[in-house]
Amino acid sequence: MQLLIALVTGLVFGLGLIVSGMTDPSKVIGFLDVTGKWDPSLAFVMGGAILVGLIAFRFAATRKQAILGGPIRLTTTRHIDRRLVLGALAFGAGWGLAGYCPGPALASLATGGSKPLIFTIAMLAGTAIFEIQDRFCSRPIKKAG
Image (tube, rainbow, N blue to C red; front, side, top):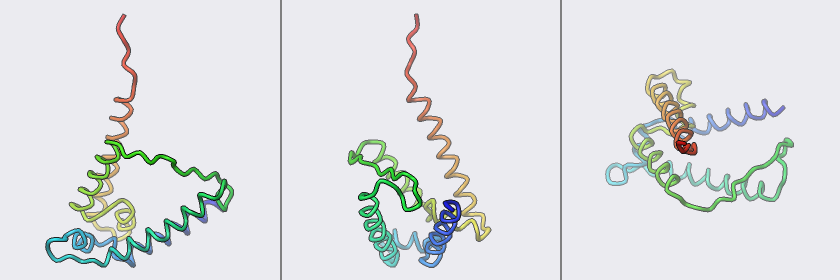
């Protein structure tokens, strides 16, 4: 049942991305071009997503289990650190350069175009590089002797 709910949720999310225009890189870049031909329409998409998320997270915060019975694990961290800021900057730069973020890129794979495929491969490669670097740098250094 959980797999079916995940499938339906993913389909609704992907359809929402397509209908809202979030899978069109030129529309996204137009939204980010605040000094040129700015297209504010995606602000409404983001506003709607924030509103839905706010309601869902308020509801989830009052529960111990998800509706389907699984545990709810909400973060309690409110700390803004260097990693968060650098990650946000990298995400924003990638979004601005490519016109894709992860969800719309995956939804755009259905179109069969090369641009979402190249973006997705680069995104996965960047994720793998980060994971390797994070594991390497987080290992304690063994002292000789």
